[in-house]
Image (spheres, rainbow, N blue to C red):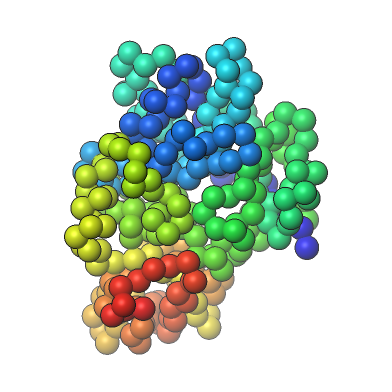
Length: 282
């Protein structure tokens, strides 16, 4: 059954100007040129050392005096930081960045024709590029009311094992491959250089990954983010986001299938079909 929810913790940053695509192309992890009306791109902004700072969906709109805009569907708490940090790299690029008044919605358990039927005039919609069951991102000038809410969406994305920004990634610490950006189509390996690209590529080609964000479940409500996870008394990871008994944890690869405990309760990992793990840990 069709579900649609308003996500009040999301915001939209507009990138305008004739240089908008080439400007973002040299800064973020994915190929910005692939964003088009009806097709979103998921990408991350990294430090120069290749560590996560923010991630967002890039939607393309063809209207505007210079032929279009790029809209970044991002965490509301990070919108101002994104505008400030990206603006540092404008130099001579003919671009402008600002937060705009659009509401972010997500629709899931729906066919494409149903999603299109929900798009009101002035709205922008595209499928979530991370996973076929992740539904559609909809940016609307008005807040839509529906039977689902943000908590329903949270449970759905946790069932899919999808990371959720700063709730799962740690600023200036998380490496993209730890957070599934490769399997979830958040990295381009062919577009060329971008900020943090060297470490991202080195992690992939040298097999340097030691940890992963992994879906977990328990018989009880999961503890708060940052709660240590242990195996035989040894700390092997930490909890990240959760909703009731579903969550995501950062775990060392060699302990994915061990006797895990957090907050006094046993944990079980749930490895989703999309996740690729080394043969010795799968």
